[in-house]
Image (tube, rainbow, N blue to C red; front, side, top):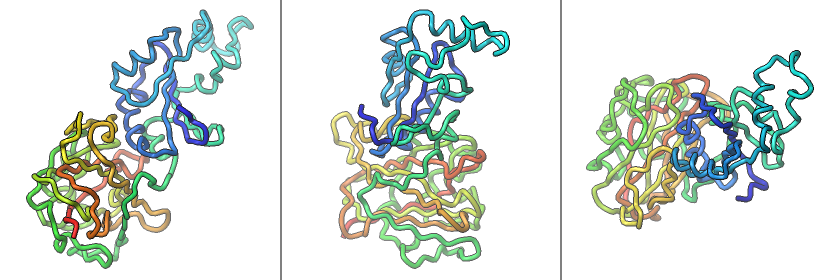
Length: 345
């Protein structure tokens, strides 16, 4: 893979090192967030002497991004391990670690975590990343969408119980294909306080700015979740509208939506976290990120994908891959209230 001119997440794995921060599931969230963006790549490097280690790690963990084996010279890793367990003042010249190991600078190894972000110019932008901090290491505007995406935001104090909008159809007025649709959980866990997927097309609006039972939101502490919408038939889709409301960080929406008619060779109806849907019969329709760069974060958000006239494609299934809006705490998942889908005119 050519990484030149791209932002690169680099993850190093030392033999026998397994710590909670770098479990493959956590890394998969980073992959899911950026896998459709041509500006970003991800690479895991296995630091051992086995030529087969990369393939074993990739197969065992169901990893889709590139994994490479960094071949260490015999005895070098042992020297590094011995040196890293001794206080610096007691290390002899023979056990002092070198400036690099097999071409890997020690800055990438002498850290609690081994996940780093390198910028397009080859400079180190961030180190000691976890899956949580890596989510916001880059604030890139969505570039994984060829569909027109409009956003309407009403800040706290300017909201209304009837979700009155000016540029996007209100939930009750949408020409809605979704009323007879069914929703199912693909991956992730809904919060105990969530109203369940049925609220997404029940035609009811939340009772206020902090109404978890009237919303769909994923569990505390998680970073992403996936759910699927089945329209029961293939339809030419003209517009997808999503609505959310919260007093603070759980108002904005960050997600990708994919479509499929279910007939593509190798179609996977339920691609789990870490699987790029575009590799198994799904088409990326749009990427959405409504987080404001200034001003109040909370309030009501309405997102409209497509103009309602031209077709976004003919699909039976829509897959929503949602992400947290912030990583300062464990409560970053959006309160989704309603999803409306209309046919192309």
